[in-house]
Amino acid sequence: MAYSISLTSNEVSELKRLKRSEKDGKILRRYQCIWMAHENFPKKEIASTLGVNIDTVTDWIKLFNKGRLG
Image (cartoon, rainbow, N blue to C red; front, side, top):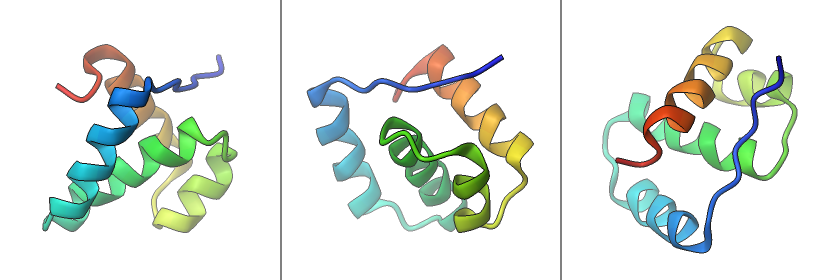
């Protein structure tokens, strides 16, 4: 099953703000994953860029779709 992300303009603004202020590298990678998925990067490329497993990317996208940025 393909998982995708479509952010509203408010969510894009909030994501940019969160990425600028985040100090924890693990959380920053999740934000970057969300942004890259929104920009339609292939999951394989996201995983390779962020240094994580493709299954992790899928998990992060599923978690985001459940709870959004909240």
